[in-house]
Each structure stands twice: as C-alpha cells, then as structure tokens.
Image 1 (cartoon, one colour):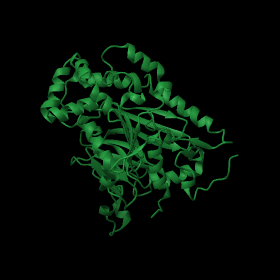
Image 2 (cartoon, rainbow, N blue to C red; image 1 turned 120 degrees about the horizontal axis):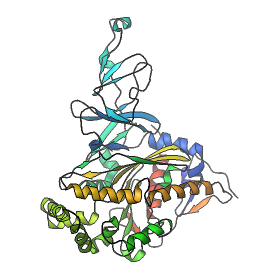
Image 3 (cartoon, rainbow, N blue to C red; image 1 turned 120 degrees about the vertical axis):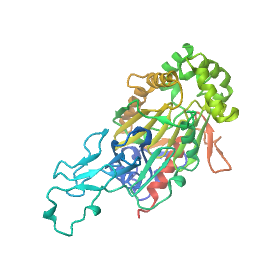
Image 4 (tube, rainbow, N blue to C red; image 1 turned 90 degrees about the vertical axis):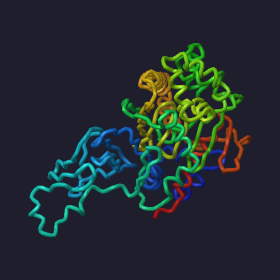
Length: 430
C-alpha cells in the first residue's frame, strides 16, 4: 500500500534505483521546489541574442517572480524585477518589444531601460528628502552569463555560475561554435508547448524514441537527404550505436551522440555538401577552427543535446526553457537559434529540421507533450507509488572526473537529474 512519506527528508523519496511518485504529484513538494530550486538556483533567463537592439526586452519569470530582461541604451543586458518601486505593479506589460522607458500604469512612475527612476509625477508631494536615485528598478540579486546565455539567481549568495555549470559549460560552447563566428541570432521567434504534467518529465531520455517516436524514425529511414537524421547512420538509440548518456553533476545531463556521429561524419558531410552552399559552410568551419576541431564541431551538428539544470536544454537547433506553473502544469518555450556567418540556406535547413520534429505541427514534440499528460494521469493510481529507474545501473561507469556514463538507452540521465533535484531540495535555506 501507499505508505506515508515525509517531505522533511527528501532522501526517502529519491533512492538508488527508484523514485517516489509524490515528487511529481504533491502540491506541497512543488511549493518547496519553487522556494528551494526556482527561487534560489541559477536559472537561464534567455540569450543575449534575443535582444539585438538597445531597448529590446522580454518578460518572463524566475519561479513565480516576474522579471524583465532588457538591453539598455548602453548596450548592456540586465535582468530586473518587473515591479514598480512605488506600489508594486509590473512596469512592463508585454512579453517582448522595444522601449527606452518603462512607465507604470498605476501612478506614472517612469524608469529608463538601464534601471534608474527617471520621472515621478508631482515630486514636490514627496518632500525635500525624496531621492529618485534610491528607487530605480531592482536588479536580480545575481546575474551572470556564459557565451551569451543569461542566468539569474534570486539568492544573494551561493555558488558562482561557473561552479554551477561545471562540465556542462563545454556543451554551451559547442552549441555556439556551430557558427564559424561563435555567434547566433535568436530572432526566428518562439513557440511553446503547455501540457498538464509535471515539469520534471522534460528530461533527456534516450530510451523512449523507439516507442514514442517510432513512426517518425521509420519515416526518416525512408527519406533520403535534407533531414537531421542524416547526422546519424543506422539506429542512434540502439545500445550498440556507441552513443552514451552522461550525468555531468549538479543535475546537468547529456545524450551524447558524438560517437555515432563521428563514425558517420563523412557520410553526413557528403549529405551536407549536396545542400545549397553546404560546402561553403563546411570550409568556413574548417578555416575557423582547424581540421580536427572543425570536424568535431561538424559532427556535433550544433546539437549537444544537453540539459542544464534546472530549466535550460539545448536540443537540435533550439534553446529550450522549462517553466513550471503548477505541480501538473508546465510551459516549454523553444527558441530556434540561427547561426551567424553562414549562408542563409544553412539556417533555412536548420529551421526546417526544427519544424519537422519540434514545431507545433512537428512529428515529435506533440507526442512528448501527450505522453507527459498521460504520465501525470497514470500517477494518480498510487496504490504502488514507486517508479523504477534502474535501467543501466549494472553497467554505469563512474569516470575519473566524477561524471557517470551509460549507454544511450540507460536511465543515467534521469538518475542524474534526480540527484541534482535532491541536492537542491535538501540544502538548508539561508
């Protein structure tokens, strides 16, 4: 039967080869996730390339707290709490746009896009000691960036971003270095999926494609050329493919397709050369990075397939941000990244690849959202509340650098994310 559990000691809920389903269904645990993870840890807010011009902004949330990421007139990207210092109303009411100033609709307080309070109607009413300099927009307690990825934390103290990222930083570099300039544009728009299920379902899972996405995998095998499947040969999700799952620590995980892609690289490059201006792109990568590094980056195909805990994933060409709304309600935002310094045809190919699988009418992402909702429904049957996550434990390797490695269909990634979850949930709040 479903024995009682305690939310004061989460180690009872996440064990070596199993997890208690309450972490996906209990609203009280979700509230603690908001407090202990999303209101304390480093979260990815977005990428600086979303804001190419001074005044460009995007509003979002850190956990439940509204923020605005804006490129100021001085060119610097900042993240502010989206809250007027007078009565607390949000000062930026649209999701994206361009503004030199943010004006509160309530009483007309005006803030510049670099933060300072610029104007207050009727300032004489506040007396001689009123100081606008003390009442600018509140910056998030901590903000840092890596390769243009903007991270913020609501905790005033804690590990640095570099400490948090650890080995995962390398894979952000790989995503960016698919461009011969090492730069991207995030101006192709965004689409989102909202599903009635827990946010932790959005993981790195190499076990499910044979079953959830069987029809699209079969179609790829029949379709010659022009598809991201051409970065692979044979079955990339088979145990014998050489591809791996990796637990990078701190909850960061990876589906590592580099072994299979490297073995198939010449075939993939032949396919790429048949694309308009494909040879030009290949040569630009080799000229910029050299033969060895250039070929490695071409093998990655701009797709590190990495999850940076807790809310960023780089999958295919997309920057994916996960927003938990409730214990059974999640929004996923997907921003296709365009490469700077490449022919337009290469970016067109990347967008078509993204649309074919992850787009609103894609062959894959809608399936994932459907299974997440069915997963949440099934967890209501909690007579036996434990879920088994032991696949690959018998062959998982602990590497010299402390990371863990399994085969591509192993649950190394699920266990790694849950270890990250348990560490953050078990820390004593400051």
